[in-house]
Every structure is written in structure tokens, then in C-alpha cells.
Image 1: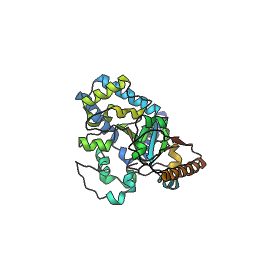
Image 2: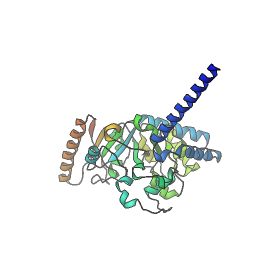
Image 3: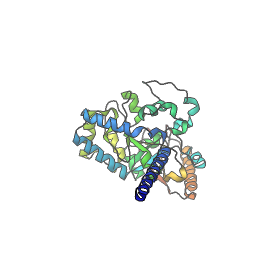
Image 4: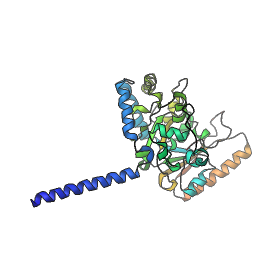
Length: 322
């Protein structure tokens, strides 16, 4: 009898501890991912049942993604003029958060959906449950050699900024999702519910935009031929289609991001502009930023890409999204 009571007490205690653990895990999970895992799995198995991909394509693409995640940096780009604010505030904000006052009342438009509404649709969350700080931040998988990224055709430093912040994977892995290509750009082109990001910790084939059998075959062929490589994530820009954007493998990082706690290292990409005065100003600014970052105990490198001929670059432009 006593033994039975003791056993019951341990069972109840075990259940309480389990429930408490689940509560804290749920409380710590970003709002954008609270309902996402079962939704993602439903889409995944639905596409398999409808034979959107062959088993060979699934294996080829998912193995490629796992290797690429493992061998690449989780990076975010910002304009050099913005990095001081990020450091001083110790916070990396999304473009939605930065521009919240001007977009918080935006209306749904299924043809030209903006980032505020795209988040709710893509991650299967009620938009009324989201606040400005809940919106995901945007990054990409980058090569360990940042100059190689540029040689592989990466235009991220051109459009998003030439300061590359590399995140600590162990801090963000479980709250990062990814897509092959620009999620919003491809959502614009393909329509509602055409984008299903996959978890970086266990990437699945759902991250192909449009869930297209034809596209799965094309990507699989590129992987098998070696034209795109896990060591060179920006090589995905060799995947050419008429309507879709495959500039990079995009990361969506969910939850708060701290410069101090979550950024591991920084690379500043150095380009020449058409103006000598601007080149001198940029070089002075880069050295100043490098010194400030190094004083904070983080590695910071200036990557000289001035010899790379990029006709479309006149000077690094401001950030599109973070």
C-alpha cells in the first residue's frame, strides 16, 4: 500500500515536472513558430502523397540542405551606417519592427502581399497575435570565405549592406527556418500558400517554392552535377527559371536577436565606388567600425573585393530587410 502511494506520488511529480518543462519551452518559443511544426509536417506529407517529388529527389535535396546548413555560416547583412545603432541598442530588428508605425495598419492584398501579412500566411499564425518584435529577421547561408561568396555571384552586400554579421548557430538553430530563394519575392510570383519554409535543424524539401515537381527535378540535377555545392551556398543562383529568384538560401530567424549574445563574428566587404572621395570615406568608416567591434571582443575582418568587377555596384546600398 505504502509502496503504491510512493509510486503514485513519483508519477504525479513526474507529470508536473514534464508539464512545467513544456510550459517553459512553449513560453520561450517565438510566436511565429508556436503552431508551425505540425503545419509544416502536414504540408510535407501532403506533397509526398500527391507525388510532388520522387524519393530520389527528396533524398538528394534534403541531404544537400543538411550539408549546406552544417558547412555554412548563418549570416545577416546590414548597411555600415546601421551597425553602430545595432551595437549600441544591442538589438537586431526586422524591417517590420523598424517601420512598424507606417505598416501596422496595412491591409491584406493577396497579389502584392507585404512582409507583415506574408509572415502570418507563411508561418500559419493569426496576425492579431503578432506584435512588432515578433516578426522574423532575415539572413542567408554564407560561405566561410566571404570573398568566395562574392565570386560565387552573391549580391547580398549590394542590396542588403556590406557588413556581414555571422550568428552563433547554437543560439539560433532551433528557431531558424529557411527557403531556397527569396521567400517574399517568390511568394509574389507564385501566389497564396506557395512558400513553406523548413526548419534549419532538420531541413525538408518543402522549402522549394511552389512545391513544384519540375523545380525539384531541376534542383536535384544541379546537385548531382556538382554545379551547386554545400560548400558554396550562393551557388544556388545557378538555378535559372523564368520567374523565380534563387539569389541565395534565405534564413528566417525567429525571436529576439542580441548583438552581444548572438553575433559571433563580423566581415566588412570592401568595394570601390565611382567616387574617390566616397572610397576614402568608406575606408575610414570601415576601420573605425572594425576597431569598435574588436574592442567588444568579437572578431572583425575587412574583406577586400575592390578587384572584383561588379558593374552593377556603384556603392553599397541601404538595407532592404533584416
